[in-house]
Length: 206
Ligand SMILES: C[S@@+](CC[C@H](N)C(=O)[O-])C[C@H]1O[C@@H](n2cnc3c(N)ncnc32)[C@H](O)[C@@H]1O
Image (cartoon, protein in one colour):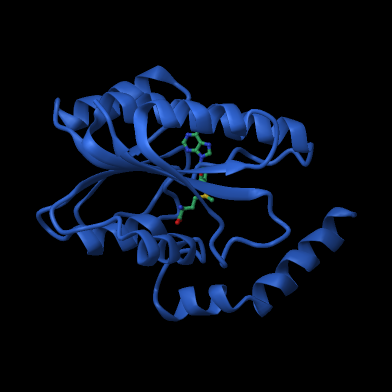
């Protein structure tokens, strides 16, 4: 599809999308929040006072939701390559999570404390080449797991976005080595034509 025609297609889809309208009315920065809300309603992830790390946080709808759920006593660290407008009770780190200094900054911010949850909605810049995008997404998921292994408290959870394809089975098996339960979620707000899905890994074993 030519670029102008695909932009037009995107615009029409956005205008028709009920989640886009709902997000605007509820002052969420992205329709992506409804994926997290659906998962949370089913799996009851967030509670007051928790410590959460949100990877790939911009423009910030997941962080907006989590910040409200964990309240003033909670702690939220959000990371993204792109800038993000401030959110209450949230420390934002701007940087590329695939780079070690950014991971170090996150660990320093944790100050040897432990997290209840690591959530990642990180998605690579899509090249349109399915296998390339899928491999990049898997790499981001692997790095999220590395962080989760070093910061999660016993019994903590990780929610991570993935693209269907090669290597996801191996990734799920790896998760099973560290977590009590590994569940796949495809929320309604995740478009049917998108290969994305989420894995919820529950009950981390130290
Ligand atoms: C789908 S968006 C996240 C939307 C977000 N959950 C929300 O509710 O607003 C994916 C984000 O991942 C970020 N991202 C992709 N690769 C990244 C990386 N290597 N390091 C940090 N952020 C990354 C992108 O910049 C983008 O903002």
